Image: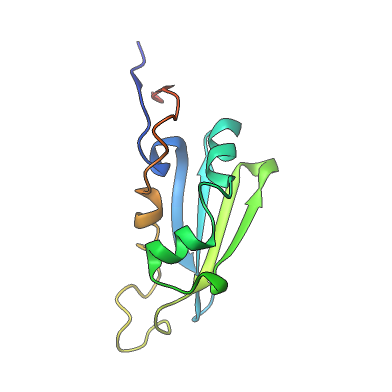
Length: 118
């Protein structure tokens, strides 16, 4: 019997949260939500907006771009890399680990329980 649990983070309601380079100067992240309910929650500007992303990543809110794609249940976020890809201070040349703070973003306490995939 599938386990029912209360989702606590964006990762809990997502199929995948990933990040990657968008050229040498930008990072892009994509959140692929499991269903319309998850998409509705994460895409809601009251939950995720440029200020939230700016706080998670230490970038200026006016540089953050958020694209909501309801037909795919996807939210895409782009912002300038903290340093140019491959430069001396670049600690993640492929931007493959930038998604972690977004994936661990806590959901509102009122998020309904879901049956865990399995």
